[in-house]
Amino acid sequence: MRFSDLISLIIDNLGRRKGRVLLTAIGVVIGTAAVVTLVSLGAGLQKSATSNLWGINDLSSIQVSPGYPKYEPGMSFNEADIKKITPAVIEQFKGMKGVKQVIIKDNIRGGSLLKYGKMEGWGNFNSVSVPDIKDLGIEAAQGVTVVEKGQVILGSQYKNNFYDPNQKPGKEPEQLPDLFGKTIDVQFIKWDNEGNQTIRRAKLEVVGILKESRSEHDWSMYINNDEMLKVNEWIAGKRIDFSKEGYNNVVVQAISPDVVVELAKQITELGFQAYTPQEAVEGINSFFAIMQIVFGGVGAIALLVAAIGIANTMTMAILERTREIGIMKAIGATNNNILAIFLGEAAGIGFLGGIGGVLLGWAICAVVNALGSSLLASGGGGGAGTQLNAIIPLWLPIFSVAFATVVGLISGLFPSLNAATMVPVDALKYE
Image 1 (cartoon, one colour):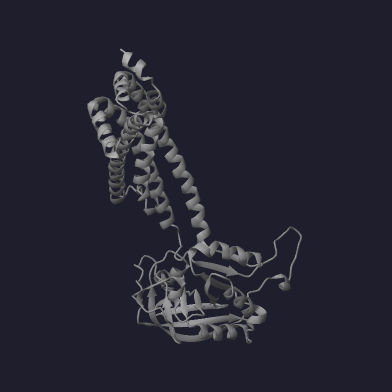
Image 2 (cartoon, one colour; image 1 turned 180 degrees about the vertical axis):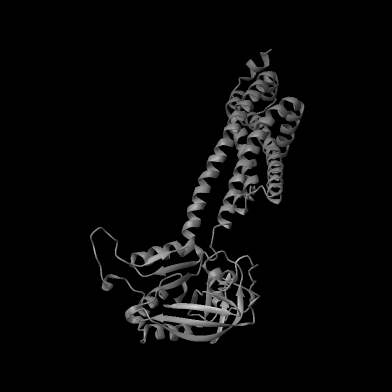
């Protein structure tokens, strides 16, 4: 029997029992739709969770800080016990496989006071060892991300750093203007052992305002790295020897997020503290992967029930067509031909149910997304982190149809074997 003849015969046989085939396929439709809907909801929740993680803007970066001995009650340690990040250690980091670059971060080691007009504020001053702070994964909303001497780049929340110290009760607070392109007065402050303070004044031109990243960068102010070193040496009252004192923090950037976790593990084994957002993302992805499997399993239960229905339908069909099977065998049909026909019919029911289930699942997901968007627009969503959204991965419809077809095939296996092994004479005598 040619394959085209087999397909034609299967289609004709299914068409002869449209009502029974439709009722049997509905069970597969419901099971497949349940799988598609539940797995899509899991995928949507996963994307919502990972995209709204606070402060994650570069999954290829590792924050590295000095290593301290594990604390135990009653123990004490001195400076020699601290694992410092020296220039030699930085070269060791750069030599690790998968490292793209190492960025040294520094911060002011004293106090600071900002002034603009009547407004005063505080400054979380930082600097990096690369010319462009864009290498940290942040972008500018205004201006540039390259800072020279006498310049400063402000985080997006800089206006919340300022206040009017002479604000009168009951009076509307004065609003700080846009500082881009303006010059602000800065007082760097150091204290001696007796608590006396010394001030070093500077004027800094604002050459950039960063985009909001919902991270520490929003509250930071970046100045030139050489300028930061001079201020810190003034505060310390001596030349800073990083080969002895080490750096407070460095950023190790990997060539790809895929190698970040392994790099962080290697750095930790060297005795340093290493943190990467990728670890949190992988943990969340693992949780939602398990959730999707559980959701898919719940939907698969409905497919199991549908499989029983397919087996019942095929059993009844074989009983009704026993004489037909006998005739086909009498005119030369082999056991394999009979087996292929009935297995094809069972798989066909599963295939049709899978197609219908995917379409129904897509429609349900569309309704869920519409309701989620409506709730969010009306203020009932509670924020981006609680947005209800269903995402259908590209592989899911293909997998669902294939799985439903396999379920139909397996369900029809036993009845089809019974049909294939019938004795032609007994089949012809069957009433």
